[in-house]
Image (tube, rainbow over all chains, first blue to last red; front, side, top):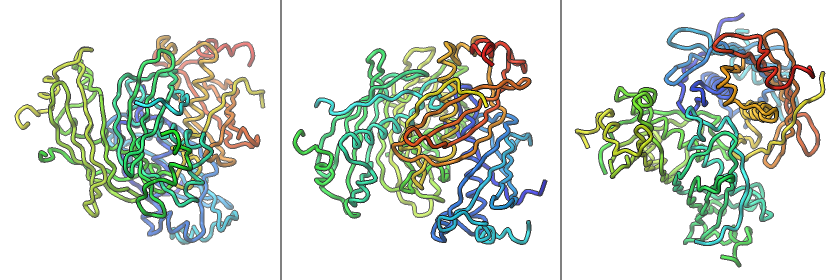
Length: 135
Length: 135
Length: 135
Length: 135
C-alpha cells in the first residue's frame, strides 16, 4: 500500500440519509467521484480541459467495502492514491470518519482513458495529472 | 382549470425515501420533470431533437403544494395540462396516489424557451408539441 | 424584506450537474433543506432532538424562482430569514453565487409543525430556535 | 453460474443522466437496490416486516463491472440470483439493455443479516425469502 497523495473533507448532508438514518450506499460513489474530481483540480487540470484534450475517463469497475456507517453531522476525510495497471488506473480510495478516525469505506475504482474514442495506454492523462514521476 | 392532456404512472423507488420513510420533497421535482419529458416524447418530439432545433427550455419558476405523503410501494398518477402566458409555458402538474386517488402534489412549473440563445415567444415549441389547436 | 439571520456556504459537487452541465433544478431543494438543517444546528437544536420533543416539521409548500445557473466548481452562499404567518413558518431562502454575488435562486419554503401529531401554532419550535425575540 | 430467479424492468429517468448524457455510475447502485427490494416483495416479504422481525440486512461489499452505458429512453432488465457463502448472501445482479440484450452492468452485492443486533448465519432471512429449497 502506497501513501495517500490527496485528501479532501466532505460533510454528510442530511438528504443523503436513508430511512434508517444512515448514508445510503449509493452516495459513497458520489463522494468517491467528488474526491477524484477535486484531486484532478488540485493538479491544475479539469474535466472540461480533459474533454477539450480529447481524453474521456471511463469507470470500468468499482469495488467498495463498507466498514462503518455515517450519520447526520458526520464529516469524512476522503483520501486516495493511484496505481497504474496496464491500461487501467486504479484509484485506491478510502474514506474515514474525521471525528474518530474510523475507516468508513475502502474502495478501488478502475478507470480507463479513451483518447479520441480509442482505449489508450493513458500516458497522456497520467502525465497531465503529474503522476509520472512519483509512481 | 383545464382537462389534463397527459398522464403517466410512476412507482416510488425505496431509495427515494428519507429518514422518516416518506418520499423526500426534492424527488417530486424529479417526478415532475420525468412527466414533462414523457409528455414531450408522447408528442413525437424529444429533448435531443429540441436541442438540435436550437430550442432550449428553461425552468424559471416552480410552485409546489405538498398535500399528502408517498411511502414505499406507492404508485403515482402524474398528470398535466399546459397553459401559455406571454413568453411562459405554465405546466400545471398534479400527482395523485393511484391506490386511493388522493392528491399528493399540486404544482405549477413555468418554462421559457430560448431559441438560438434568445428568449422566444415559444411558438416553435408550442407547435412542435402539437399544442396550437387545443389550447 | 428582513435581514438574513443565517448563512452557509455550499459547494457544487459535479454529480449534481445534469446533461447540460448545470445544476439540476431538484438539487436546489436539497441545498435549501441542507441550509435549514444547518440553521437549526446553529441554534443548538437538531432534528433528532426535535423528534424526541414530539415536534415534526413538514414542508407544505415551496416557491422557487430560478434566476441564474450554477456550474462545476461554483460555490453558493445560501442565506435565510424566517417569518411567522399563522400556523406557518415561511423560510425566505436566497442563494447567491459566491464569486460574483449574483442571485441564483429565490425561494419561500412554508413549514408547519406537527406537535404530537397535531397541527400546532408552532410556538414550541419557534422558541427552541430562539426566534421569539428577534422577529 | 446459476439461473436467475428474479427479474424486473426499470426505465431510465432523464434526471439520472450526467453531464455526458449517460446514466451516472452511482445510479446503478440505486437500480440494484430497487431490484433487491422488488425481489423481496415478490417473495411476499418486505423490509418493513423484516425490521419488525428484528432482521436488518446490511450491504458489506459491492463489486460492479460497467460493461456498456445507458442513455435517455433506455429500459433495463435487471436480474438476480442469490448464493449463500458463510454468513454472507451474495446477490449476483446483472443488468441488460432490454432493446439489444447487451450486458450493461455485472454486480455482486454481499449482504449480511443482523438479527437482534447480532451478526447471524442468516437462516431466518433465507427461509423467509423461500430460498432454502432451491439453492
